[in-house]
Length: 198
Image (cartoon, rainbow, N blue to C red; front, side, top):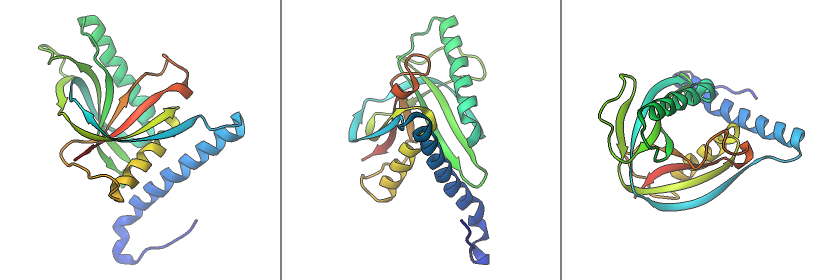
């Protein structure tokens, strides 16, 4: 595919490469699964607006290249899990909050979170307490390998842009993990992509 932009829109070039490139990559991954396995082990469920009760968490915040999230974020969850285990802290859910997608730099800023019932008094310097307030959320559920989760994000963003639900500012989008890699086969991983809604 080849195209051009008027000279005064030069600032959009990197962003367009990022958006189109990610869509192209998702399509190739879906095609690869279909050719190699005879099916795409990924599906979306559109669950609409739901009530979210809020959540307290201990988290690690990081900015990394989008292409490296699949390596960096699991390492953050591993570090959180080890701390919880050594400190005897009960886990009350796992989720990731996405603060910024910089498509020009192809970077993402996120917080890897393990839920807690109440704030933890003593934490190492790289961990912190936080919370997501109670709110309504619009949910698109992804069932399958994380390599295809971009389709759920794209669906959510398009529905938000198309005003298919009334979005609410001030609460960053988050992924809620109903299970984790290693607990179930990849095709059975369940992740809710959650956008705050009015």
